[in-house]
View 1 (cartoon, rainbow over the protein chains, first blue to last red):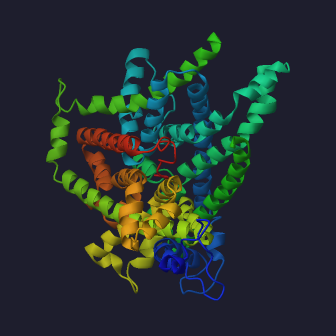
View 2 (view 1 turned 135 degrees about the vertical axis):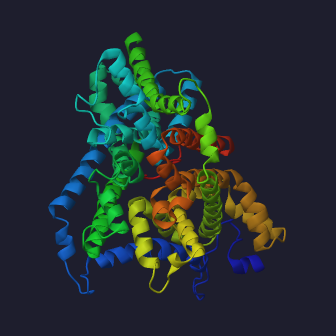
View 3 (view 1 turned 90 degrees about the horizontal axis):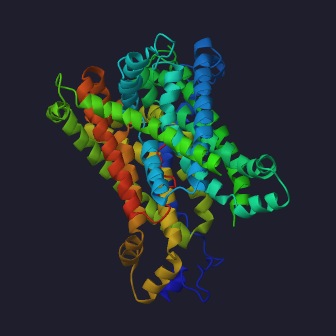
Length: 302
Length: 266
C-alpha cells in the first residue's frame, strides 16, 4: 500500500502517474540541485549579464555592448577566434587522420588501446604544466630548439618562430586538441560500415567516389561537430595562454583575467560585457554542435 | 594496400613523436639540475620546497570535498528524476551541460562579483573562500559528473531494483545507500577520479580565489623562477593525471575512457 502511494510499484512495473487530484511534488527531489545551480551558475552569470547593460550608476545602457567594438577588444576577440579556428582545424584534420588510421588500419589491439588511454591523459594534460613542457621543448633553450641549431644549423627563432606568439600557442594547444579529436571522432569512424564501401566498390565506385559521395557526407556532421567542440575548448582556455606568454598575447580570456585583478579597462561594466560576449559565442557554437550531432546520430544508429 | 598501411603508420608515428617530445624534453631537463651529471636533485628540491606539498594537500582536500558535494547533489537527483520525475530530465540535462558554455574565467569572474563583499561576503573568510572554490569546481565538473552518473543509472534498472527493495520492506535510505549506490560504484569512482584530475591541475579559478594555497598556481609560480623544480613538478603532475586516468580505465565499464573523460578549456 505504501508503495502505491509513493507511486512506484504498479502492475506493469512502470512508475505510476500521480493521481489527477493530487498536485505533483516531483519538483521537490530536484530542488537541491536547482538551488545549487541557481546560486553558483545562474546567479553569477546573471550578475555579469545585468552588469553588462548598466552604467556605473546602475542605469540601463547599451554603451558597454558598443564598447566591444573598441579596437583592443575587437582585436582580442579576433585573435581568440583565429587561434581557436586554427587549432580546431589542425587538431580536427590531424586527429581525424590519426583516428582513421587507428580504426581502419588493422592495428594490433595494444596499439589502439594504449593510444586511446594516452589520448584520455593528453587531453586532460593542459594548462600550466603543458605550457611549461613546451617551454622545455620549443622555448629559446628548449631541447628541440637546441638540437635543431646544433645538429642542423637551423635557428627557429631567427626564422621567425616564437613559442610565445600565435603559432607557438597554436602548436601548444594542439597537444590537447588532437587527442580530444581522436576521442570524439572515433565512434563516428567506427560507425562507417564496411558494407557501404563494399557496396560502392561492387557498383564500380573508385575510392575517390566512395569518399566524395558516401564517406565525407556521412562523416561531415560529426567532423564539423567535433571541430566546434575543439573551437570551444581553445576559445575558453586561459591557463595555458597565460603561463606560456606571461599574459602578453591579447586574448579575451587574458583580458578578462587582467580585468578581474585590476580594472584595466577603466570600466567594470565593460568587463562584464566582455565576459557576456564570450558566453554568447560559446552558446551559438553549442547550438550548432547539438544540431549537427542530431544529424550525425541518424547515420550512426545501427 | 601496402601504401595504405604506410600512411596509417605515418600518422601514428608522427603523433607519437609530437606527444612524447615535450614529455621527454621536460624529463630530460628535470634530471640535469646538477651540472655535468644526471641526478634527481630537482625532485629533491621540489619536495623540500615549502610551497609544494602543502598546496598538493590543500588541492587534494578541495578535490575530495568537490567529489562529495558533486555526488551528494547528483546521485539522489538523477535517481529521483529517473524514478519519479522523468519530465524533469531535459531540464536536469540542460543545466548539467550548461557549464560547457561558461568558460572557467567567466565563471570565476561572476562568482567573485556575486559573492565577494555585498550581502554574502563569502571571500572574507578562509572557509567562505574554500566553499566558493568547491562550489565552482562542482559547477565545472557538472557535465562529467552528470554524464557518468546518468550512464551508470541507465545501465542498471533503477525502477525494478527499487520495487524489489521496497517489496522486501526496505526504506528509502536503505534503497539508496545499500541498493542503488553499490550498483553505481564504478560510475561514481570514474566520476571521482576525473574530478580529482580536474581539480588538481586547475589553475584559473584557484588563482583568483585562493592563489598560492592551491597546487595549480604553485606550479605556475615555481615555473616563474625555478626551472629545474618546475620541470620536476610538470613530470609529477603528468604522472598524477596518468594514474587517475588509469584508475578510470580499471574501475570503468568498457567505453568509459572514450565517454567524455576530458576536462573543459584550461
